[in-house]
Image 1 (cartoon, rainbow, N blue to C red):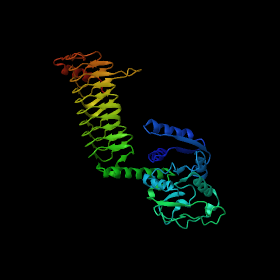
Image 2: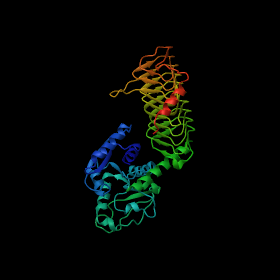
Image 3: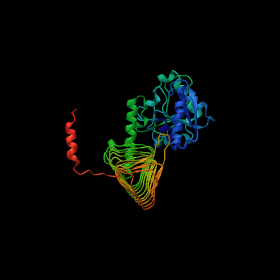
Image 4: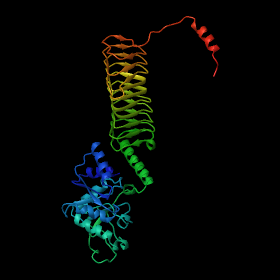
Amino acid sequence: MLVHVVHLAESLGCSQILVVVSLGTEPAVQEVLTAYRTGGGSLRQVVTTQYAEFCQDPSAVLSGLEALSSPETTALVLHANQPLMSKAGLKVLGSWAERGRDVACLTDDLQAPWPLCQHGMPVVCGPVHQLGKWAEWRKSAAAKEAAVTEAYPLEDDERGQLLEDTSNAPGWKTAFGGGVHEVDATSLLLVRSRADLAEAEKLLRQRLVAHHQRQGVTFRDPDNTWLGPDVSFGTDVEIGIGVQLMGTTHLGDNVVVEGPTVIKDSVVGANSRVAAFSHLDSATVGDDAGVGPFGRLRQNARTEANTYVGNFVELKNATLREGAQACHLAYLGDADVGAKTNIGAGTITCNFNGRSKNRTTVGQGAFIGSNSTLVAPVTVRDGAFVAAGSVITQEVPEGAVAFGRARQTNKEGYVEQLMDKLALQPTT
């Protein structure tokens, strides 16, 4: 949730982002922010400051305001457990503050702007010195008795004092003025429980799906699609039932993803198809390529154009060059497979010797027969063939055929003798 809010603040062009944390939670907060940076987040400046109480208390806001350089600075107060805040609504608050107005606040109902009277701090924007007055008032006993008699939209520039404290508490009557901007109720959802978190995630997914639908993406079952905020699409993409798209993922033009499939931190090239029950993690699929069903590409797996990774094939830190294919039941780990090479069913690269990983290199136009074992480090040169069932431990020269299996022996008429022997053995 924190990353969502920080990312939103970044998108608004905030020059400084300050995170107020509870005492003892700063290491966890820093870990989250570090992971965000590592994943490509562009935090310009995040300063964390300690605070010992519940972080939605007005005192926490005062603690944050004290760390800002100038009392005339315009500050925006957001809450880490309010991840669905809309950029459009916050821009209205910022515009109000830039026109020299006082405190501006968000609400989901202009007739009953509950954030102004609830305990805790609403989403507010304004000069630091005015926000300080606001927070001090929120801490006071007078705030518990206060009522909002008038609240007008920020767009109404003809109004003067838009908010009025009617508690008659000395010093507060004209301490501040401000305005209210109405937003959708879901934007103000506060996450206080796992149930709230699940609801927020669902609403965020619905927003994301609706946005991409407007851009031309087809979702066969929008309610059963898991979609992350950093997923992007080309044109005319089709997403099947039960697909999960996570992390920094991009699907190119005319891509089809059948469900259920999981794709995380991966790129799928134009006109490619990912069949059902496939799993892609940190992988790149080229244009006009196919994966699955039941294909698995992980940790720097890469397939170029016109390749095919079929059912129950796994790639790890491996590259399939243009036109190569591995159609069935294969494991290619730490491998480079040349263009237009065929990997037969049951082929594996033995990449781990118990202590370290080693690479297998297969040249272009090669043919690896079914049930072959390539013991790394090993190289199969361009145009070479490996006979089915072979165990390859040495380099196979260009254009050669390698046989790495025991010679077959046929014993004519031996079946009858064998059955007689077996008949004499006790049954178990």
